[in-house]
Length: 477
Image (cartoon, rainbow, N blue to C red; front, side, top):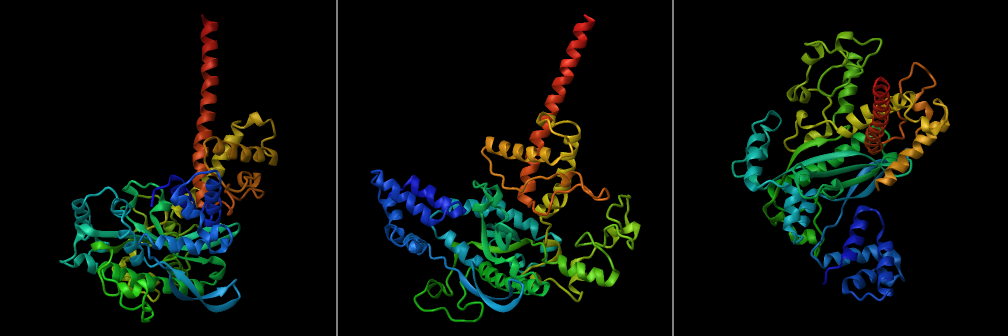
């Protein structure tokens, strides 16, 4: 089939979620109506019965993709949820298994792309050297896969597991489990959306109960662990996770017991999951020591009335006591409550890393942005709007200026409006902080805008200073 730039662009928009497949087929039919004769465009336009049954367009797309060797299908799992926070029931959900995803990518006749998103720009020898170094480090020293003398380290993909909430619809978040290769960011593809692969989506309103949340984590961890075990062996499972036989004449039935992914293997390298261990650890610390902990690994405390000043995380003395209360992996596994993710092969406490989106953009940036914005307001950076500093009119103008700047640079910003109470709290005891409606992506975008706006304010200030100095020189001359 002939290549079509139009079809490639439309399918990429569908894959990114910018448009749905029905919209893509409408555009394809419009191109045909303009007199363009192209076999591939016609094939896309025919999805959904050439517009007569648009609800079947997505089904037809999957059928079309199978003709190119893509046989990836979701795996149905059963998870106990509290639907809308009230009704407890077992819900069947679709899940993309990592070992099946990597096999589909490896056999999709795009070896260069597969190599890039799985191994970055590293050669086979560099990958082997990386794992030779890693298996000497404490968190991975006892990993059974790395200790296997017959394991080909040059074909070993380091898997980074990630889970976090994402706002799919307004005021409605989904908790998304996903994975990517730890080498992917060094490849030719720089868009994280093109090298991070989803595992499972669950609406957070169904898992507000802490017991339900831990139950979901347990089920997902066990299934992901089962999938990664087969990915590490490079052999497709003969039965499903629930020990069920695969139906005859299906892709899974035909692949059972056979080699997968052309020799590539997968190993869980690290996890970035907000409540993989934080919830259990904080609950244990609260019960035992009545603490408000700040860290997963030590007993640094938040400043409260009952907190020990020496254990305050703000204690920057050369040898603070909380640094001597670090919990190691062996101590952690001997406690009564251990993370559900410990069932993964090679899991260790120190292979779970902090999520920069939470630590930086939600933890620090929301405070920093509001504080810096107030400084800019009080220094007169927005005096050109000719409205009072402490007024909602000024902050409405600032919001409009933010949107205008992003449009001028052809960038998207969908954050909520900035209001005065963020920079000037009603209670003077409160600190400046952006509201909880601001997500990590909004904070990241606003940091860029803030840098641009601060630079502009500095240039204006320096320009006035230069003008004043030139006038002084003229007067003296």
